Amino acid sequence: MTRDTHFASIKKGLLEFAVLKVVGTGQLYAADILARLEKTEFATQEGTLYPLLSKLRREGWVHYEWQESSLGPPRKYYRLTSHGRGHLDTLDRYWKTIDRTLIELGG
Image (cartoon, rainbow, N blue to C red; front, side):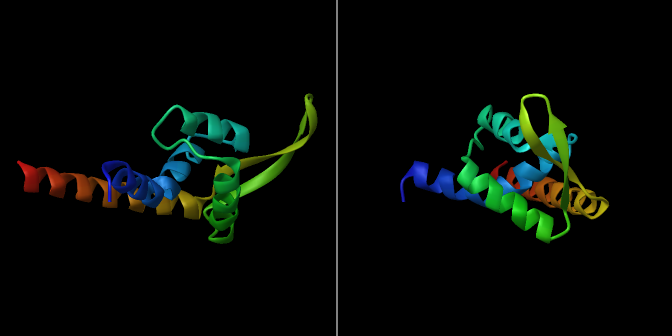
């Protein structure tokens, strides 16, 4: 595996966490989520984001509601549920543990 392949694998494993972090900032339209991710190492495509948002909804971690748009048809806006907030808090704790452990291992 090349460095890029390793990095891509790590990012893929963390994309759900990244999307939950973004949605946790407030009620967002999918294009807004993509734009936020685009500014980071977690840039992704609609074809990846929409199935992930559907999975997060089935898990009960995100909810969406339709809102009218002056720019065209109604849009789905996503937000975390209380269950999703709890899951994100758990993932944050896991991440802090992983980060602390790797720092301890590497000095």
